[in-house]
Amino acid sequence: MSATSESIGRMIRDARSSRGWSQQRLADELGTVQSAVHRIENGQQNLSLSMIGRLAEALEMPLIQTVTEGTVNFEIEGGRKLSGEIDVRTSKNAAMAILCASLLNHGRTVLRGIARIEEVDRISEVLTSIGVSLTWIGDNDLEIKRPAHLTPQTIDSRAARRTRSILMLLGPLMHEFDQFRLPFSGGCDLGARTVHPHMSALSRMGLTVDATEGHYHATVGDRSVEHRSITLIERGDTVTENAIMAAARTPGVTTLRNASGNYMVQDLCFYLQLLGVQIDGVGTTTLTITGVDRIEADVEYHISEDPIEAMSLLTAGIVTRSEITVRRCPIEFLEVEFAVLDEMGQEMRLSEEYRSRNGKTRLVDVTVVPSELRAPLDKIHPMPFPGLNIDNLPFFAVICATATGQSVIYDWVYDNRAIHLKKLSEFGANIQLMDAHRLLIIGPTRWRGRRIESPPALRPAVCLLLAALAARGTTTLMDVYVINRGYEDLPQRLNKLGANINTFWGEPAQA
Ligand SMILES: CC(=O)N[C@H]1[C@@H](OP(=O)(O)OP(=O)(O)OC[C@H]2O[C@@H](n3ccc(=O)[nH]c3=O)[C@H](O)[C@@H]2O)O[C@H](CO)[C@@H](O)[C@@H]1O
Ligand SMILES: C=C(OP(=O)(O)O)C(=O)O
Image (cartoon, rainbow, N blue to C red; front, side, top):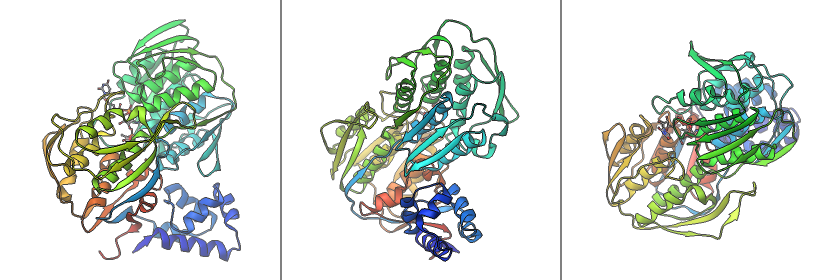
């Protein structure tokens, strides 16, 4: 059996009408807004796992769960030119950090422009399970109110284990409990992902963590040191964020060295500054944070645009040799990527800069123009900010396969990500795995569509989707939860540029 988002949309509309409910009434039952119901009924919005559950309950319609059993998949009719303009949405990674940081605030936080993605649903499930009240007050606006006492003992372990970000509850929770435990973290399967740098940094602020039997067991000791200087053992993003959250409510001044200045860290700092925490050095590798004893502020914060989504959308234009404009690209976090593209012969036009709604992040609109791409002379490798972003490296595998000549992609960071990218060869790319970290790519590629399983890693899975857009014929990309984890309504938005991507559950109709 197979169900598409359109056929499910019709089922929902019929079930709602037969109850005599308006779209607004159903929206109220679902805890969402009327425009979302309108889009769901027209098959124009991704149905997240939690939304499917809420629809089944609100409409007393177990059938919807039956037809959406199994995996959610994409069918892509490739080889189409794209055209037009598309806006970059806000980032998964900043949303994750700020949602965790909202626990530091005993007042009301409204996060504006937050992406409706599976990852946000997972951390929302976690926060709700420990007592936090989360209410969608607009399509993409979330109101967060925490209770006086959080209950980590009632945590939704299933949701927690599906996200890397659970780690970022260590920093906020250490201010409230002498002892607590959290389930082990999940996220993309990129090989072993260390948590030791988190433990090392937090131990300097009095937290000891013992990782046994599927849980991090945290014990809080002496936090009374007046001034502390902590050098992170690696410049990771979530470790920097955890240390900032720990420092934000630890009395005294904390200096963090070897801190990440990456986009999600900057967003977190802007939010904490709004809460009244003094943080100096935002965007640099040295942060000075003056802790405050209690935070109780009613604030609204606009999350900023996602440089990784920007790069994904630009890659869609580049590999399909189309002219498209990707609006609202956070330029500070794309400069090295653009320099490499320029070296490869990619023509791009950039608008004047303007500010994101947070008043801080610099944005530009970027138009990519069909260009004759050549392989770069040297290997392409990522670096912590301000280098080429670690999460943008995978897109260069698809771009290099489109270019003429021999390229080397060197992912020193993750053990498995290059291995997942090897899957591009199933679309006709000439890609050899030189070792677990290096890909040799010989282009150009005549991409051809096929049926393929998504790898368990977000960016490599999106790379397959992008190759499918460029490929002749039809691609069936099975099990795209991993894509929906980080991108909001990606098929619907790419379809507005002229792509042809259908979402379906179960087996493809023609299989
Ligand atoms: C929720 C979230 O925000 N996730 C992002 C975050 O994960 P996160 O910060 O959790 O990244 P991980 O700790 O998993 O990975 C970073 C890896 O980079 C390596 N490393 C990094 C810096 C350094 O100075 N030395 C070093 O060795 C380490 O192997 C480390 O394991 O940052 C990663 C790297 O940008 C991104 O892929 C993830 O999307
Ligand atoms: C690796 C990623 O995410 P996470 O840290 O959530 O697994 C990613 O966003 O590409």
